[in-house]
Structures are given as C-alpha cells and as structure tokens.
Amino acid sequence: MSRPVKICVVDNGGQWTHRIWRVLRELGCDSKIISNTTPVDTIDTDGLVLSGGAPRIAWESPRLGLCTDYLKEFNGPVFGICVGLQLMAVHCGGKAGPSEIPEYGLAQVKVIEEDDLFKGIPREFRAWESHNDEVKEAKGFVVLAVSENCKIQAAKHETKPFYGVQFHPEVNDTENGEDIYRNFVEVVKSQRKK
Image (cartoon, rainbow, N blue to C red; front, top):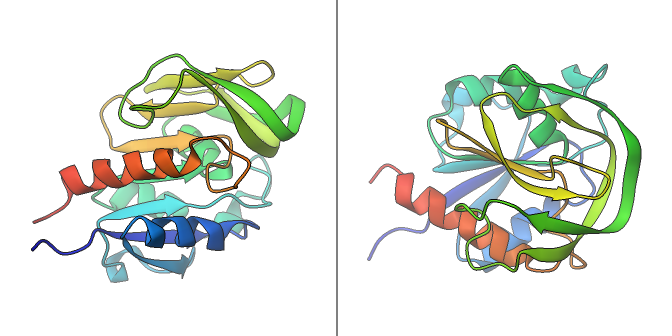
C-alpha cells in the first residue's frame, strides 16, 4: 500500500489556514501547518500550499517569510491561495497590485481552461473572495479562470508545477472547493518522489 501524500500548508497569517489543513486531512493527506519562516531544507513534503493572508503584495511582502525560497528551491507542486498566487506571479516576472474593484464575498468564477485544477468541475461556480490586491500580469502562466472584476482568478505556470487561485476554495461557501483541492492532491500524487 502506498503512503499517504504529504502536503504542508505554509501559514501566511490567513484566517482560513486551518481550513486548508482540515480539507487536506479529509482528503486523506498527511498534512501539517508550517510557519512561513521554516527553512526549505527542513521541509519533508510532496507538495506545498501557500495560504492566503493579510500582507499586501506591493509593500508587505517581507511578511511572507521564506515563500520566495520555496518557489525557488522546493522540488514539487505548489498551490498558491490569494496572496500566494500574487507572490507566484511576481516571483515569475509578472505584476500584482491593488484591485480596481476589491472583491469580498461570493463572486461568479468562469473556468476558461479546464487543466488539472478544474478537472470535472463546472465551467461556472460561486467562490468566496477576500482580496484588495490581484495579479495584474502573469508571465509564463496560463490563465485558467476569471470573474467579472478579476481577470486572473486562477492560473498555472507553463513549465513549473505552480498553481494558484485568487479565491478561497477552502471556505464552505465556495462551490466545488474540496474538488479543487482533490485535483491538486492528484497532481501531487502524480509528481511525488516514490
């Protein structure tokens, strides 16, 4: 019998970090929450989730600890939630900053590229939003989903195993949220070290 998939949740101070951990545990993962100051060479995991959090990407990115190191050095799939997606975009040469229309509460998300993350999920669903900032430009990423007020709701890097969403799939109000995490777990399973 194969061992459970290990996925660490990097805590960026988000209010729903524990929910991410709980969803992953319910999906059968060996999951734990780690500080965003945990040195990358001490992390024993198959995949990482960069949680959302309060830091504003433009001027508070130091509060995201070593997340940039994880993107440079961790050898496995990474799933960025909210500010996690914004950091990924900036790290890969894109841009993130204040939203023209910040989103709070439910928004209608439209999937424009199914890919691994949205496999088996309806092309439109409601998702919980809580952001002042957003990705403005995602160099090297394929945009997977949009909403009326946010043109990059989800993206996947063209060559690296980086995935990200602007919304919060771990919140109960997000439709198909558990399925999105399940799809990420399948990505991790397919790429993990045996």
